[in-house]
Image 1 (cartoon, rainbow, N blue to C red):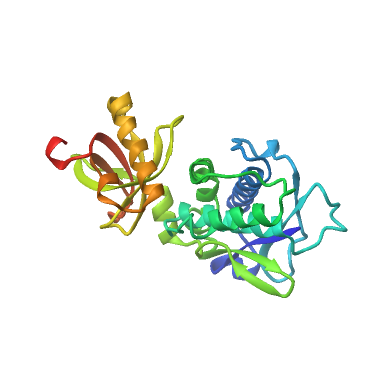
Image 2: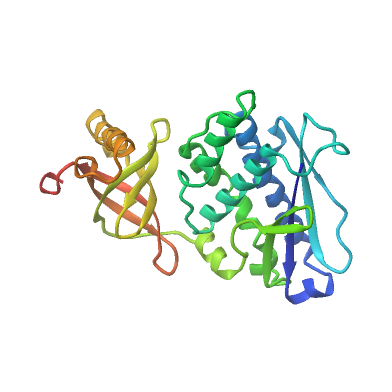
Length: 293
């Protein structure tokens, strides 16, 4: 069993009031993002509708007196709510996965291989009979995409009615509390809600760290950014040669990170936040040599 709460502070929320519509939409977004993330951990597939959650139930605790706070209780169906232990390996994975999804969605990069990916592998090795499937970074990229609207809605009391100034998502384990993702505020809203594509393409170089052949989306590690950047191949570069350059870079980078033979050069449009921070790339051309780009 996992307990994760959503709370707001500042403005009218300090007087235990909040705009009803914005509060309701925030709760829908909270439940939807929890359900989509939980379903992936338990079933290894990405759903688009929260009611399709299988293997777990998400319930709500009564609101706490003196605050605008709602606590969601996620209980996997192998337990009933009254008997579910509060500290389980699967519970840890679900909360870590939700932290990863929220953080990445709001512009705070988390190294998948060194954090959540490693946790999942260690869990599967230590628990051979576990129902948790092998999961790829690209699957979480899909979850992040599906949760974008839901996580925008978490900001409604802050940016629409302005009946709150800040939101927090907190996991509770016994007497300890752990933040999930960054605080919700105007800065995180600016990252998730606004995307601008540059008028002219730019040249990038990097190494492919993940790729989904079904969606033509993935991530490429760019030294200048110091992190993997999400990308999508445009229609013009979805042929065998271009995709081969992507997958060969991924293979070589998996064998030995950041070697020259795995480096690729791209011409791409930047998708940026309103203040110019790079969110993703739309790739127009790709080559294994800057001279032939």
